[in-house]
Amino acid sequence: MPKKNLKSAISALFGALLVLSLTGCSAAGPDAMTRLTRQVTDGVEGKSGDIRVVNVLLVEQEDGSAVLVGTVANSGEASDSITQITADGIPGVFSAPELFTNEPAIFEGDSSNSSARFEGLNAKASGHVTIQFYFADGAPVILEAIVREKNDIYENVGN
Image 1 (spheres, rainbow, N blue to C red):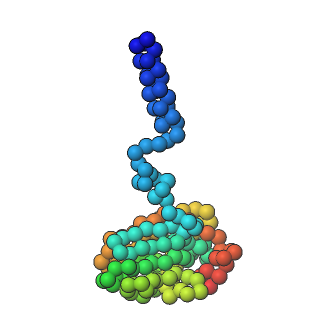
Image 2 (cartoon, helix red, strand yellow):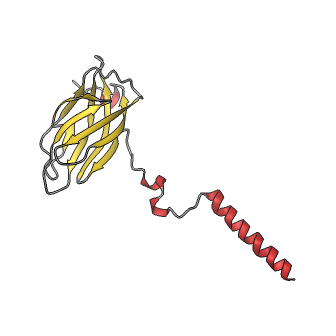
Image 3 (spheres, rainbow, N blue to C red):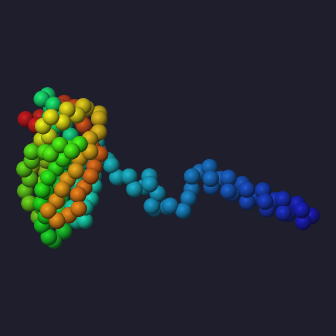
């Protein structure tokens, strides 16, 4: 009789371990990588202290350049400014306002107040490019952004 109970206990323990391992359950819980993914558009996002960079992507242009689309926002009390933006190491020609609290720099679109173009990048649609945002006070934000074709909703980007 004791052997039967021991055998049943071992079988139940083995079954429980098998269920946990096959379902991918772990101790990660709310910190699981799949829960931390926040990309909801083609654009990517990053953060440096109180500065958030969101919905960033590039739109290829007919002349081989690329134009930045995205938003940079500062939620901190101290202002900051963008000092440089690069795409695959190529410095962008850009203009952007100082980043005051809740006054974002919007690159392209109907409410844009900023622009950035990367001459000679020659990035192709569907490819990815490393974009780096440098700030006067904050740490850089480094993103792997997709390059979109200049059509559909991006048809007028760079005009």
